Structures are given as C-alpha cells and as structure tokens.
Image 1 (cartoon, helix red, strand yellow):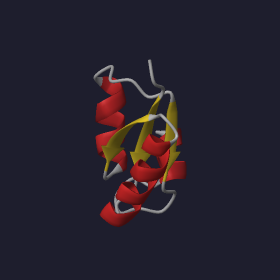
Image 2 (cartoon, rainbow, N blue to C red):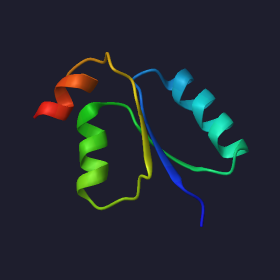
Image 3 (cartoon, rainbow, N blue to C red):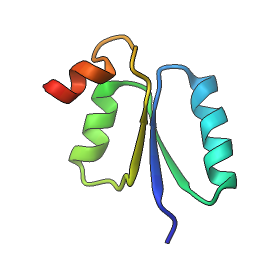
Image 4 (spheres, rainbow, N blue to C red):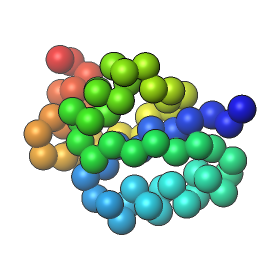
Length: 68
C-alpha cells in the first residue's frame, strides 16, 4: 500500500504541484488548505504518513498549530 502524504498549503497551485511530484514517486496524496482542515483530517483518523506543511498561512500557522 502506498504511503500517504498530507499536503497543507493555502495555495492551490502549490498543492497541485506537490501532488504531481509525490504521485509520480508512488505516494498517495491528501490535501488540506488550512491548519484547521489538516487537524480535522487527522482527527478523523484519515491516514497521513508524512505531512508537508506550509509554515505561513492565514489562521493557524504551521509552528503555532503544533503548540495548540
């Protein structure tokens, strides 16, 4: 089974570019456009073996999300 990468970025172009590269490397890709969506994704038990996180986004930012 492919490892899953959760891409968290508010920029849809960046999410698509990362998805294309990771899928080409054999990974499954899930998306979240905010820190809140990423937390919800993980809270629901959805898989994520790796999280690629934009550190500066509106709302929760990467470093602050880790401390909450």
